[in-house]
Amino acid sequence: MKRAITATVAVLALVVARSVLIPRAFDAAAAQGRASTPREVPKFKVDPTWLKVPSKWILGMVSSSNVDAQDNLWVLQRPLTLSADEKSKAAPPVLEFNAAGEFLQAWGGPGDGYEWPGTEHGIYVDPRGFVWIGGSGSGDNQLLKFTKEGKFVTQIGHAKQSTGNADTVNLNEPADVFIYQKTNELFVADGYSNKRIIVFDADTGKFKRMWGAFRQCAEGRSASAARRAWTGPRQRSRR
Image (tube, rainbow, N blue to C red; front, side):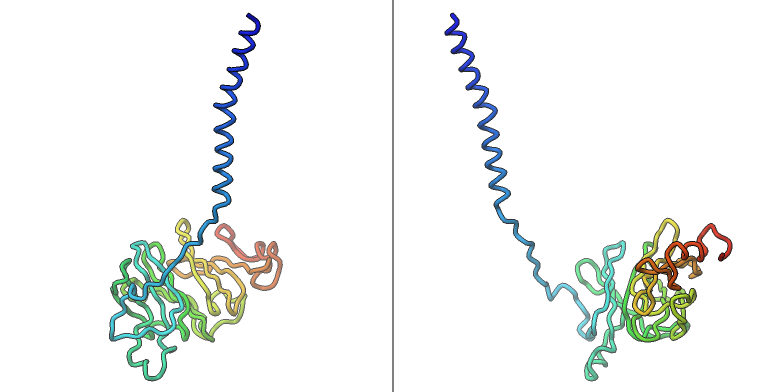
């Protein structure tokens, strides 16, 4: 009787081992096989026919692009970078295309009431549909705001008027912009000739605050001193 019980226990142990250990061994081997299989790097191929620029126009150097809430692509290009024999066919600086690459409209360039940048650099379409344009040329100390149809709205700063990092009115070759919707603030990376982040009201263009990179404020003081010096939304005066 004892021998029968012992044999039964041994058989059960073998069954348990087979049902538990063998599948685990297979899982471990499969995982090892997966780990040893090299992952392929995604391959991208340029589609030269996707962007359908009207045949009457030629693009200069494309300095920036941005996609709006409608999935349309906005392109900012530099007509002045074209050769002398191409300039008669230069496209306007700002062009809009839909997601299929089809041309929708174009506008931009010098006009009445605003100072167009000497060297087009950045374009940004904000959540409310306004188009912001900045420049990176010498004396490009301004940002321009337009409607999507190219109607001028406002300008922050003026060409060739910057007095440096402490200037709260003018910029100096702004690199990029972004609007924080919750507070309707325009954050500007004023970082080519200046070395700072400066914030304006997106509607009025009024200065709100600024700080510098590498733990230095715009005037060269420490970050803690900068926080004490520059007025914020809840502060009434500069200390």
